[in-house]
Amino acid sequence: MSCTGAGVLRCGGCLRHFTASTPHPCPVTPGVIRLKSMDLSPEQLRFIEAVRKPKHHRREIQLQKRFNEIPRAEQLDTLLYIFTHSNNYGDQQDCSRFLPDFVSDCDYALEELLMQIAPTWNLSVEELPDFLADVYGAERVVNTSKSLATQHPDDSYERRSLGTIAWWLKRRCPDGG
Image (cartoon, rainbow, N blue to C red; front, side, top):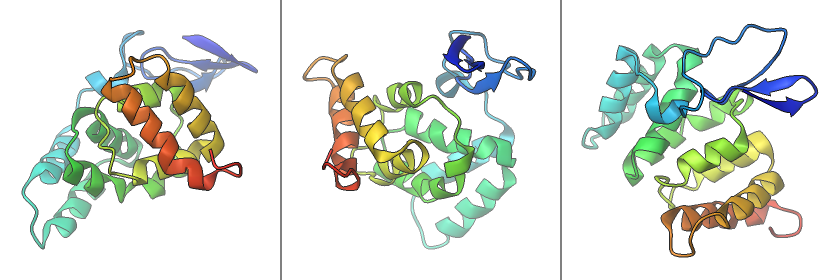
């Protein structure tokens, strides 16, 4: 756990913020990144299986049905799991259409979330940067992405990914990012 100021703590395991006066429900061992190592419920597994199936005309109905079977508290984690475990454009694009419903539910630390997503985010899925901007503010996401990108080698996918997040959002910044 680490203190982020004003009595707010951040769990090193699940990366969620909480106050010292509230019990911390994290089942994850500190130091383990939750999205990379989380155990999936049967509902989450069925949704992920549906996302990875070949595309067909009834697929959207099936995805929505499977997604609705997942408890609301686990839905955002399930979507972000896809972004940390698959670079497939179709998988991420399908999941990105659900993201706008979770803008107010996302309580992950921006830096940690970007670092988890950077190795596997498909650069063509612009809905993820838009979601991040809606949650954290475009300017903050751009600045944080640019800063984190400098921690990676010039030719790394992570650096390219973080730079592309900033590029997608430059149109949403007053100074052009």
